[in-house]
Amino acid sequence: MRLVIRAAEALRAGRLIPITSAHVDSCLYHGEATIDFVERLVNGAAHVSVPTTLNVGALDLLHPELWRGDARTAERGKLLMGHYRALGCTPTYTCAPYQLSFARPGLGEQVAWAESNAIVFCNSVLGARTERYGDFTDIACAITGRVPDAGLHRTDARRATVVLRLSAEIPLPLLDDDALYPVLGIVLGRRAGGRIAAIDGLPPGLSEDRLKAIGAAAASSGAVAMFHAVGSTPEAATLGAALQGRAPDETLEITLAELRAARDELTTAETGAPGTLIGTVSLGTPHASLAELRAVERELAGAHPAAGVELMVSTGRNLLAEAEDEGLAQRLRAQGVELLVDTCSYIAPVLRPSPLPAMTDSGKWAFYAPGNIGVEVIFGSLRECVRSAVRGSVWRDPDLWGTA
Amino acid sequence: MNGRVLAPGSADAIAIVLREPLSLWGGMDPASGEVIDARHPQRGKNLAGRIVVMPAARGSSSSSSVLAEAVRAGHAPAGILLAEADLILAVGAAVAEELYGVRVPIVVVAPGELALIADGQAVAISEEGEITLG
Image 1 (cartoon, rainbow over the protein chains, first blue to last red):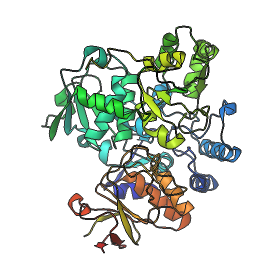
Image 2 (cartoon, helix red, strand yellow; image 1 turned 135 degrees about the vertical axis):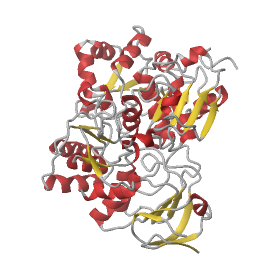
Image 3 (cartoon, rainbow over the protein chains, first blue to last red; image 1 turned 90 degrees about the vertical axis):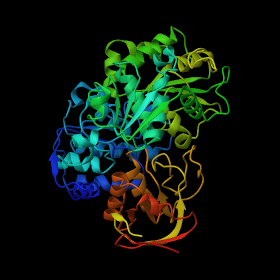
Image 4 (cartoon, each protein chain N blue to C red; image 1 turned 120 degrees about the horizontal axis):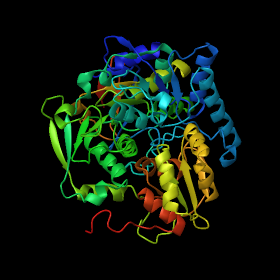
């Protein structure tokens, strides 16, 4: 409770309000401090008071053979994951709890979620209400069942104050391709910082996977906790609704040139040009949905990754079970796809070491993998990534980003 | 100058002014204090024992853990000055104090005043959030 009060003071809240669920990120091992903290709670016989899901941990508990790191880190990471289970949390171990029907709060529900991409999705796409909770605060809120009545828990703070208008020059095929959305998210994070933006000019009714990609990238390049996509997200049926009837502080145009520049920055390798040899393809950050797993199968079109190329897809254990039920997981594995659960390929040492760059369709993976696991990254769409894995070198969709 | 205290404590150290926002998770190695974000212009600099001046925060909700772990490992910043309140860092400091009895003061200062602090300048932070430039 002391931590919740400290949070309330930091947010200048006058009171605490009840929550209906929580999503806890503290189960990922970052060193002994994370264990020292949870052991205080476990020894004090603490227990969560609301349904609580868990974020990714340090390792894949269902496929421990994928671990390539040292045994002690694996043991400490596993211990931490178990401690949070002992506090009464549901062992979902996914960064995409919004893909689980039992863990999706409804419009206007007050919750306490951690994990930057889940926070954005919760606020923006589900219309449920959470602040940017971090490690320690998340479990403190789950145990007390209370959050500070501040920030995004309140209607007025959810208003867009900046409008990002997509330029009319953006090619239609790009608007209809998955590759645009993580790149748009990177631009959103840079332009908005910690402000709430309304993106205008997108096709209406965007899929949850595309909205997920925008949010995950925006929460990597900025401190974004919420955005509105006019015509897609529930508090932005119209631009006026997103602005809550007031004028924006600022309206900015997003040009094709800015998007291309952001796309290029996601590649850290010397070149991401067609024909560049790759060693790894990593998909599923945030965790792949069933639709995305099916898209991997469709793009493979019966082929295997080239010799020496590892194709790994991260997903949640609950989704993997569904994919196994329909035979999809077995078919993907038979085609040489490695499926990772409970963690992510830029957190756990699971990728086969390679001197060649890694290709990804994720803005977030492209952002963090070079620092976390020391790989050079090439960014591309899911289709480009899978076809490149089959070739063993970069394949580009020639007309995707316009012809300039 | 005076600021709003998010995490109490006092410090007297050399400032490092971050030219871009930094997420501590994925951005700072808690075992050394080194900036590891591949895209950050100050990659390779060390934040341990420095007053970190951050015009804006960004990124991961795991930064609370990374700050607490850096304190445990003895490689945390001496203090953090922000232009906007950041709950994630404030809680990391609160937990570190509770577990290890080490305080990392975090203070929010008006952006115009924060801009007065130069890289390499000596900065003192008091318990009350008063900031003195050397």
